[in-house]
Length: 270
Image (cartoon, rainbow, N blue to C red; front, top):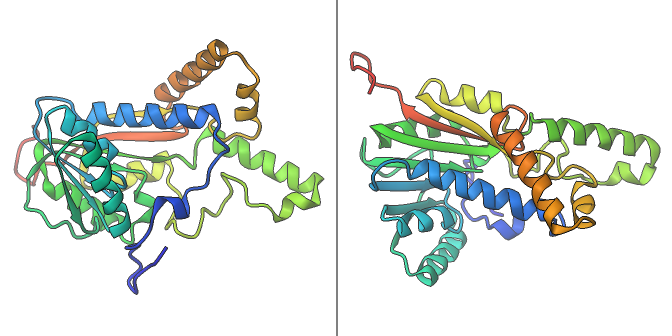
């Protein structure tokens, strides 16, 4: 990953920074559930114009394009935009791709019906500026769907406790970086939690909805345990943990916020 002098991560690629959890069933489940719920939240209402901030491979706006939306994906990385272009062409969808950073969106005020910012807040240089820009470009009656891994959730707290126990009992574990360890990897600018994402959005947006995605993803031994069970039991456990997390976003592995821009002073709320 390359970082420019001002700190913007302009040449990253997912393969360089993603830490995997050995093809566990819960990994496939959580990403599928996360994608589906964010896409449905962003697509609420009649199709209009949608943008995905830090779009990566643009899979979310590609799906919305298939649903009739005018889709735009924006990312600072040329490598990611190349992947996004290949993926959208393979899907047979027209998605407009733009290079840029969230802190300085190259769009007019009130131009988007819907906005997605997914798993990107913890890569921004100036998160408050980015949220101000997101609020600026979304129509007053529009929505911003902002989501990230929840480092304040139940799974993270329990995992970090297990890491401390492992390091106390096995010296070799003291040299290992575990999945939910703190501090977060160097390419992240801070740890997302339900509370700090909520507070980040509060000056710029009103809350429409908030929910979680999954529980226990990445907890030591959880994926291995699931792999030993029959598929029908695994699916039931994953659905159950997900529904619990959905209702309790403060504890969930991922928190999702659906926001509406705050009305300008002197204007009534929509």
